[in-house]
Amino acid sequence: MFRGEIMVLPRPVLLRRLGVLVATLALASTLTAGPASAVPVVTVAGGAVSGFSRDGIDQYFGVPMAVADRYASPRPAPGWTGVREAVRHDDQCPQAVPLPIDLPPIPALPANSEDCLGIDLYVPPNAAGRSLPVMVYLYGGAFVVGNTTQYDSPSQLVRDGDVIVAIPNYRVGSFGFLALPELAAESGGATGNQGIEDQQFALRWVRDNIAAFGGDPSNVTIFGESAGGMSVCTHLASPRSAGLFHKAIVQSGPCSRSPLVPPSREVAFARGAAFAEEMGCGDGPGRLACLRSVPVDGLLESTTHSFTSPNATWTPVVDGVVLTDTPEGALRAGASADVPILMGSNSEEGGTFVVLFDYAAGRVPTAESVAASVREVYPEDADAILATYPVAAYPTPADALSAVWTDSLFACPTVVTADAARAGGARVWQYRFTDAPLAPSGPLLPGAFHAADVPYLFSRLGGIPVPWTGSAAALADRMKRTWATFAHTGDPNGPGLPAWPDSGASGHPALQIDRDRAEPVTDVADVHRCGFWAGVSPADRVQ
Image (cartoon, rainbow, N blue to C red; front, side, top):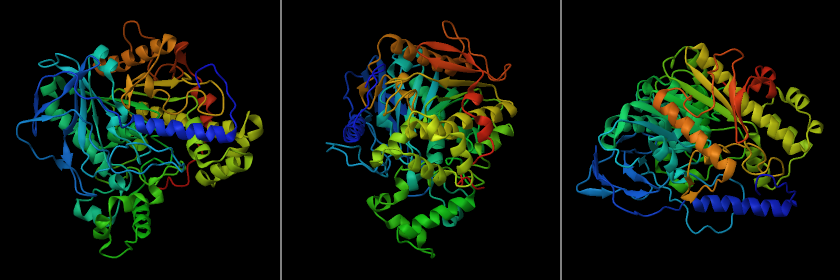
């Protein structure tokens, strides 16, 4: 389905196409290209590495960064002798296929391995001896899925933007976010943030090693989408991340008032205890040892590793050590007053989640299922939400549910987060992405759905070229230049780019980003009913 083509598919055909789409994306994420030509050998903390050249840039895949025992903090990877070939992506950190759908046979998926903490580097040619801005990308996936292979590669961003992009693996699911009192006791109080600690280790690795590739450790931008954006917010709030980066980009990151907001230790401990019980490890003194002895596949059988609802089990945790406050609270208190921030959301984020939570489960939304979904996430405010978003006011029940997820989980949390950062002294540029890469309407992924912005920043995804042409290619070029300009200067404004006032200007404007339009707008909060959502919180967001 391409932009401009509106299709209405019978339900069986729709579900078959969804299955093929998911299978295709999963297969694409396994594809890598071997070395095309040699590139400079670079010496890092563990030893020397050689990469390869493709798409006009130098690439180094799977550079050993860290190792970690299960549920423990990462530690430096052991060194090696000779020159290590860095031409293959790492295995992915353990994760389950998150959808309740029977997929067509897939020849190969990224292998699960607890030895997964490597980093991929994408470097302009002849960068040695230079001092280039560094952009560290943190992948999304609701903190239950994601890997570096999916984002191969940001070649145009690197080549034309004259930046280095680093993409580290980090642990997800229970492997990355299990919190228990026993873990806190053995790690000085840190618990439930192993995946965030992996990211912090990556930022320290970049600080200590990136100069060897031609990067400037004093000019590091962190950026990420979805849970990657939430990760960026977590680093903005974490005292352990201070000084490891200097600019931040949050794309569709639900950083406040959503189920991904870091809970208190007590809530996280309750989640961890329930998981241990589900795994047959009980609540006794041997609970942690029991969990560490369960095979990887056994842990992944837990329903908590699936992604069937906005409610989340595995998120960062306000543990008092790695994270001492929620991102909203820390930003409002000035935790990152000296860090320029670019953040935004897409205008129809919720369409992706209707596909994931309804169509992928074999269900076409109805008025009754919409009500049930809303009550699951917002039990105390469901009646008010359903009255504000009546199914009868939308073309289909799916459209009504998409609007609820868009406004509550992304658009309004972005507005709140931007307000908090600005109140804490940070300079913030906000955007609303409205381009529809597929069809502007229809039953599957209409409008600017969740993650619709990602293909405009990467030239390949899963090794597959992104085939933009015409105005879409022009938009992709403009976004890459804007993101790179921000990495260079801390301001997205530059020659040939749209004028973008920061959100401290009159009316708190946001830049609307579309292939047909790039201008400031001041109606984001009104369009997405953020006044209504100011008084609503998910039931699971308990402090």
